[in-house]
Length: 136
Image (cartoon, rainbow, N blue to C red; front, top):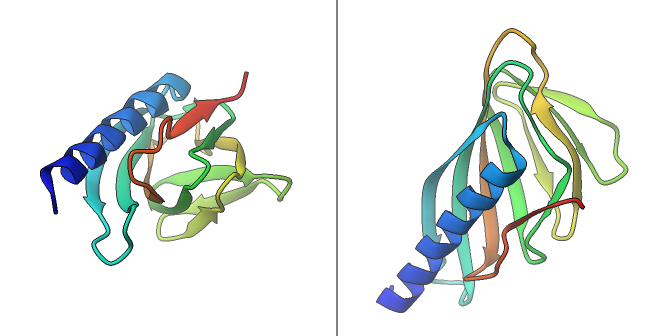
C-alpha cells in the first residue's frame, strides 16, 4: 500500500472518530482498524468501536454516501433504527447493517444501568469526507 493511500485511510479514520464524537456526546468512539482494500481500488475498510454508557445515545445521522456499514454488538444491548424500518434491540453477538445513504434514526444503549459497545465496520470510498453527518 502506498504512503499516500495509507495516510488517506488514517485521516478518514480520524475524521470518523471525530465526527462520531460530535454526534455521540454521551459515548466514545475509538478507531479500531483502517486499511485500503488492495483488490478493490479506491475502497477502504474502516472499523471503529462505539461505547455507550448506560442511557447513552447518538443523535440521528447519516454516514458517507459511499459507506456500507456492518455493525456488531460486542456487549450489552443497542437499540437501532435505520431508515423507516422498525426500531429493534440488538444484543451481544447480533448484528445489523446500513446501506449507503441510509438514515440512522436511532442509535443508543437500550439499558439505563449497563454499558454497551458495538463495532462498526465501514466499506467506504478512500478519503470520502465527512464520514458521519448529524441531522440538522
